[in-house]
Image 1 (cartoon, rainbow, N blue to C red):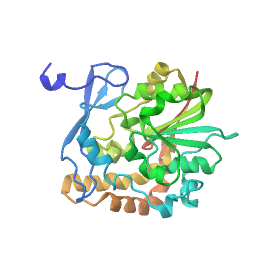
Image 2: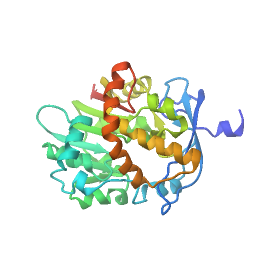
Image 3: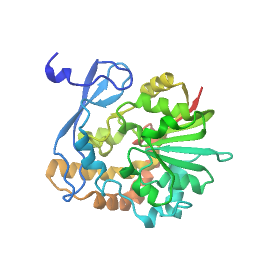
Image 4: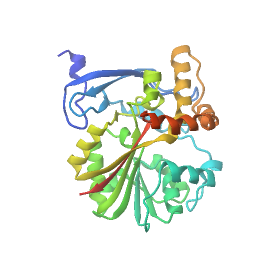
Length: 312
């Protein structure tokens, strides 16, 4: 084994070292005012559990260049709303379709990796006693400025066991270096019979087949790994969870525009800011909504995978 191969980490889900090369993806882009390292990041597919993972984790400095940039979380108050007790009608309607809360009487809810707190605010507007989890005080600043209750990841061990009826990991599990440990920590906090909802980007989708290394949801180096049905079954077995159902999220086809813009940037040097990309993505939604709903009928998975699990 060469030195370069020896430096590739083992599979973060099952620990296996047998793997095949998947793709070398260019690093994500913010804008000219917030430069990030220009690099290519190789991903590998585990031969055992089929997880797709970044061979070497990025440095703290590289991650900070992304996460601490004000343009990383692109959101607009007119769309998402700034009050903790409500979100705008447009955003609320989208979330009710794309990320629904469980039916029945609302209870206690925890949103892991809550970012600016949009889903926490949405869950509260649905009657849930909702709090968020973020990595640092800096990353929690915007959500707290909205009056939302946010705890730090380092404080999770102090939380009482089995106190939450509903735990969500919305596009966050791909950002953690040890997904099994993260899900196990969430399982400890979940009530027996409670619901855990995990959503993450789908690597094996039509959009990846079209754009390859320019597929927007690779988002290197921020997305450390991706999961398949076999991977998620392995995580559930290791953490005391049972997979209830897996669903495709068809409401993310508009990210096709992000992939197209990434293709123009990486292949031809035509770059637009993250903010401009978000605007163009929103404008493209009416056009992409129809194929988003039709393609799954022909067996094509969307770019978002949803898993509903319960505590055994």
